[in-house]
Length: 387
Image 1 (cartoon, rainbow, N blue to C red):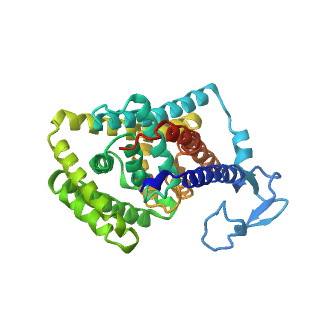
Image 2: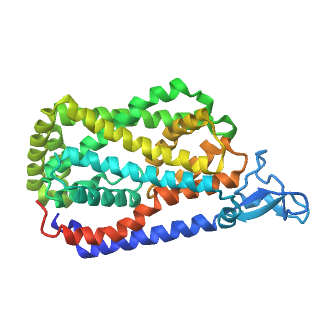
Image 3: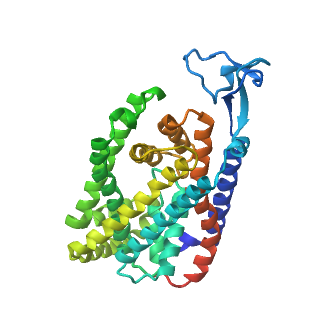
């Protein structure tokens, strides 16, 4: 356990993070698709090779070379150049960046509240940035929670309490999702959340509700573990550390379990006001996260109030896909779901691809690059601090 942040592991993490960043950026800008163009400007003809009756703009086999065709190939890089950047667009992009800052600012407030302000603003900033870096490198289904416990422990938070804090953050994030879903379906029609024109309406619904009930089950389990039966955490840890590979550290698991139970009892004594503040900071962080996409869309597409509400609602569906994604940070899956769910707000499929790239440039890639820079600084700063 002492080698969790050994030099070679740090080097591998940094190299991995930077490689992923550059590779994804390169692929994002090099991504190509067919676009419909004016008569006489086309280079390809649609032939519907897969016989699905749909123009698959990303499928090269669906087109053949033809000088009088109605389609041509265009890259995301050239599409970005073709986009009309007005002062209004820059205003909304800056607002999207501000919402990204807001997402982390409220996370910083939450971590300070959970540590009873024992973490300074600077320490809280480092914790959240490294946490986001770990999340960006991890598959969506895993997230950065496992690493977060070690991050907090290195900031002099006892491991058991750090584990309890991570459990609370996971519980609050899931609780936000569960409480908001009824409002989403109350104000937004079902066909707006699962567009039938995409051809995936029923599968999307099945995946969404399966994901919802999994999240609900996890939320209930976390609540019971922390507030009613904290000894369950001890039993789970001891069971895990009974495995042959890590059996030698079973005594550490027993100590962690005791710390978790003590931390749970401490949190059980907190006032209602304390938990309201924790939930409100969670709410503000998630709303800020979702408003990034709204701002990006408003930068290039004229949207009304109801359109913005629909986009907010559809992001709950999008988040489910990112959550179950096996890829780092939900990459690939996020862009696909983004295009399928939000394509109804513009007739330009290429513009949707450009908006997806801008969204990821603002809300995903910065954490990879910033994390790679901040991690060595934070490790040096916290050297010898571990509790």
